[in-house]
Amino acid sequence: MPRTPSQEIAALQPLDKSGFIPLYYQIQRALLERIHSGELAEGDLLASEEELARSYKVSRMTARQALHGLKSRGYALSQKGRGTFVTKPKLEKNIMHLRGFTEDMKQRGMQPSSQLLEQTVIDAGEDLAETLRISPEMQLLKLRRLRLADGMPMALEESFVPLQRFPGLEKISFANQSLYYILRENYGVKVAWADEIIEALPATREESELLTIPKRASVLSISRTIMTKEQRPIEVACSRYRGDRYRALIRIPTTTIE
Image (cartoon, rainbow, N blue to C red):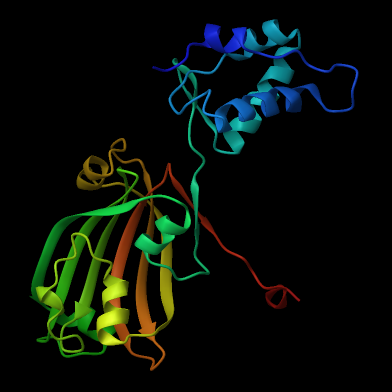
């Protein structure tokens, strides 16, 4: 059951007002310690600026700085008229590192799973055929999956893979299988790189329902074309990540700004 602000304040520790560590940082650190220990859980209502200031005998500005620090690091979120609540920090999507959802979640210590929304065989058509360098009448495997981590909807993915290059792929159920694992282990595919387009977009009605986010909330959209070491495109895909759980991370080599 979520803790109330009164329970939270009762557990506060006194500040060291004679030391060199800023008071706002001491408050922020104390709250972070309790979040990391599980004493404060996601969804718990934090004490307000006024309550923190009164309890710690500091100014409202100091209390405001402490709460702002939590929010800027992704550990708290303010809702107008309701207060400030404990949240989980956003996962960083490193766009300079090509990794599938299943592997990515396992690396983070989370349990990945999928809900298969669609697995069909379609004709490529002009646009996809051009990107995949095949004829428009050739067939593709179309996959639509809701990707979850620890049971929470995290992303909606749509993939198109040319069946001419991977015969029999359509017979495999991808409800509990990693597409990249199957391509690597069953077909010997060695992925080299990907072209990606990253956008911040408003969620459609279907996306908001499947990802359990508010209507027209922001999603991190990543459209990609996966290439092999032989310079052959093997997948066109689009992933829509929850904007409240993801942010993009890019590391720029110094050579690009010398």
